[in-house]
Length: 261
Image (cartoon, rainbow, N blue to C red; front, top):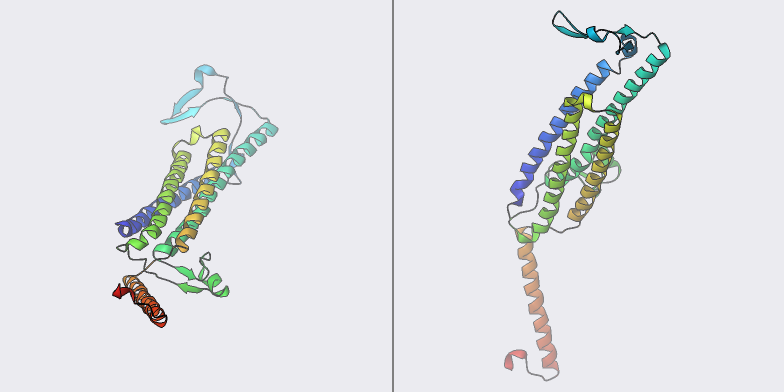
């Protein structure tokens, strides 16, 4: 079936994307914290009339591009502008945090199915201490079902569907973070709101998909080769016992056995 090998490959891709998401998120958070959300930020900005001194507005001093203007000493307007900037970058930080906090939902379930850890008996718990408190059994490592057995195909289909959808959403979340990093000047309040709504939708889809497929995988029986052999032997024995009972019943009533016909 080839599914078993694709599972660890997808896990590797998943881990790479998550690592890159955290890396870009950390970079952005540090930039916003030191530049725009520092308590001293507002003291370092000034309003200027940028439509004054038009012929001399852009200057270069010591190879540094500068803007020349007339200071507009209006404290109320300056504070209003500063508050708007702080709110904008606070909203960015909240968007970044929402992305980071959403990542474990699917990861926990994929690991619980593919490699561990897993809380046996309480599969919706993903912390060892909570598992023990709720009467579950914490299993650090598990062996996934045999992918060579056709009866296990549906179980693998659920897992790979979960992984594929998760990878798509991770890639899109990473792209959104890169937009915040690489196109900072193009992300105004309106654009940020649109991105925020998209992230909400992505998280909702991701969690619903992983929840449903995880439940389906948990309720889908899987088998080992030994279990299938035992099942076959049980069926054969049951068939033989049924045939023997039928023969005995026919004999009791003076009827010939099936073999005699």
